[in-house]
Amino acid sequence: MSIFVLAGGKMIRAVFIDVGGVVIDLDMERCKRTFRERCGTARMEEYLDPCHQKGLISDLEAGAITVEGFYSEALKYCRPGTTSQDIADSFHSLLVGVKREKAECIRRLARKYDLFILSNNNEVCIDKTYSMFAEAGIPVDSTFRDAFFSCRLKMLKPAREIYLESVRRSGFKAGEILFVDDSPVNVAAAREAGITAVLYEPSKTLSETLSPFLPEAAPGSRRKLRSSELGRMTAQQYRSKPDSGLAVVLDNIRSAYNVGSIFRSSDAFGVDRIVLCGISAVPPSAEIHKSALGAEDAVRWEHCDSALEAVEALKAEGYTVVAVEQTVGSVSLADFDRKSGVRYAFVFGNEVDGVAQEVVDAADLAVEIPQYGTKHSLNVAVSAGAVLWEAVRKNR
Image 1 (cartoon, rainbow, N blue to C red):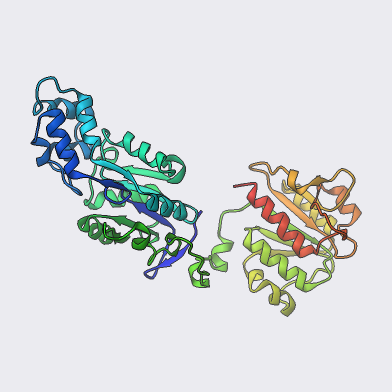
Image 2 (cartoon, rainbow, N blue to C red):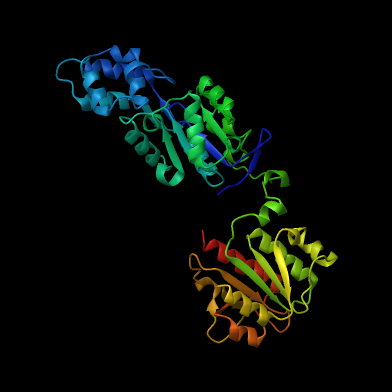
């Protein structure tokens, strides 16, 4: 996803979210009462805390004891006849559920950011957590990239190592992450680890807490993003990015403005190289720059005297060559099947004559864009944008 938004001077790409007290509301008094009534013990009250459990429960959340070991020890404090299920149900009574506002906020964020759970949690309550998230319409497995639970990492917030390990596993840098938690101690520790951290307070909604940092958290947010918020790479970074497996061949494009527009679309969709053939204009060119807006400095390009020569060279390099042209037996763009691991070179032709017949003959296949009006063709730069977007979309 990797959508960048400026927050507090940092470019945020991922969001770490605590569970208890942030997403799932807690009822500490109900839990204590249930332990007393169902298990006949008040001992658990010594261990329960809204943010930082103590004693036996802390050991469970740290992964220091097994679930069986926890039940075995907890049963010593309960009235005779109490079962492990009684203890589990009493523990579950701490969890109230997920409010609609919070679920809607998380769904909005999931469209823009990579979301992760970072929670002090335990194996007795994790299944219940998953169930409550699913009931709220935010299933953990499909809404979050990963879930970092203390009992599985065997480390607890606010220890520095849990933040460092979660950052490492996420694949993001600490400065690219925003973390929300209801514990001031946990928030402070996250900030010390280089993470932008926000304190959730029950007096506010989750949207109100996050929207000053992440505008998308607010319901109905439609503010246009500033260029500085988009987090685009530099031309140098573009040239060193991993290959996309896409190349473009321009066969005698007569308009330098069209060439510039194709450079811009190629940059947007991560094209590795453009081969400019025949009379196609080449950089540096004022006309190309006017429509490319600097994309000609990012996308690698080369010139070749003929498109046929370029196509033969690309095929020798292992590219599958696709002529974007209306031909007998051409494939609709909607039906084009981009195969994983295959490199493709798309050939776009002259504004009047299209792709030369000899180039069509040399291509591996022809693709055409379905049209439903009176005209026979699209502007070549428009065609390039449509084809490249479809090629990228089918590889995601």
